[in-house]
Length: 264
Ligand SMILES: *[C@@H]1O[C@H](CO)[C@@H](O)[C@H](O)[C@H]1NC(C)=O
Image: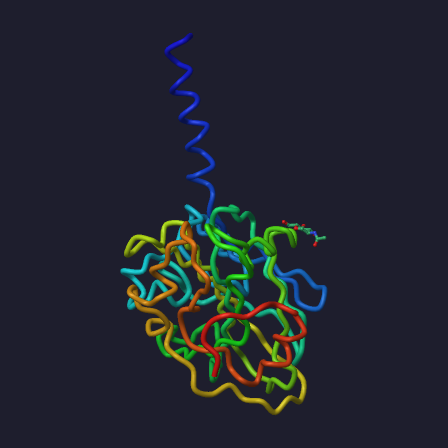
């Protein structure tokens, strides 16, 4: 039996590493649960209706910085439009429920919104222009310090945000994303986990979402904040990607998060 022990030990050490990424299993909007996309659903015929975009992330894996200029970064690997919507209104509380998140995978958490200008179930993902409306990253300490991902884990592995309080009615894709930095000291070591969800916003808001950035133009592999050594005595963190849109400032404060990085 003795020769088996090292093998069993190494297998048990490996298993958490292999399964240690995550995906959004569901979205709670104003208290109502909507099932998200789960890559295992791809074997079902017909495909279940999910507002969560379909992606080939069966491994719960990630998009690497060398693909930040390619369509996989928009809504994860080989993503296809979600075939349903969640219903929301301006100021809705939105919670993204992750299946799991490892404490080592510290980094920024972002929420972006893009108008579909039509039907999000058929829109060309490369035409979507994303505006960042919520962001958090480093909170305190270093090597590795405390990050919003630690709060996400403490909050039942979920992230809550609110939609802009005067958001105009229409169809939108919300792109929720965690960027894990545990290997980001090496070029191409950061890990992006984008998750897209179709939203049908009702009500009588007047704030339209304009400007925005194509998913493939959000980050570069060389951005400070994409290349970053978590295991050093850092004193700040520059959040990669576009600044948080002004229309969302009020919602950000309501969360009481601490902020570092680019401001408008
Ligand atoms: C925690 O997450 C699970 C799903 O992973 C969910 O079923 C449960 O309702 C959540 N608990 C709370 C208090 O939100």
